[in-house]
Image (cartoon, rainbow, N blue to C red; front, top):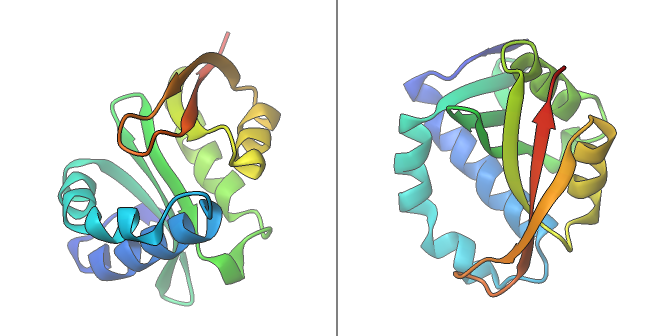
Length: 141
């Protein structure tokens, strides 16, 4: 079931965010994510968040700031079960234009978004990590 974020979700959401980032970005030191937890928590509380709930607890979430996808994360044990697709489908229903940033080395995420019709529109260096990122955009015609 997909629903809007509730304040009581925050601890589960932050656990998903941290573990998913560490797992997907082995090319970035874990400390980077750990050191950014409090900043991300503040941003999550201000964003538009949709939560995929399984068994009464969050299994994944997608966060938006207007038409920018700030993140899409799924618990590792729940991946490849359509949760990420369901979350993305939820926001695609209400947004005709979306953008996001993704590390170029995160091939599975890049391929996922390409499959959904996103295009790589820019390449730049993330000033915090020094890693190459793609800007990806989606336009519904």
